[in-house]
Image (cartoon, rainbow, N blue to C red; front, side, top):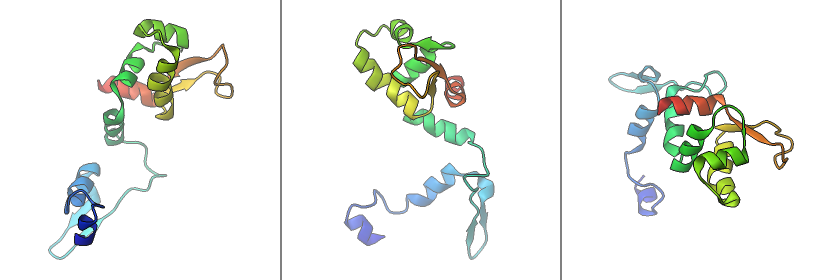
Length: 134
């Protein structure tokens, strides 16, 4: 570890275990006098937990939070921009819309035609869960 620290490839020695303990439930860890057994859930067999949703919430920008709170049912871009008081279409697309779509917080009503003039947007289950956390 010292080599990695000297090369600035790790931010702090010894920070990994506390992060792992924080990220997983206590029942994943079995401590004994001589060893630690960690049993991590497989990604395919476990649904997203509240911990995952909380971590997603930490990654969401203020602009995306505003977008999620403004989105009511199914709405088009113009309606959402008007609710948010935004005039610049490109700024709205880059700062609000695209990041929310990439994080799977909102979805398109016509996913195979993202630039359609009839395109509308709605909250995904993940987006709804994030709104409820606030």
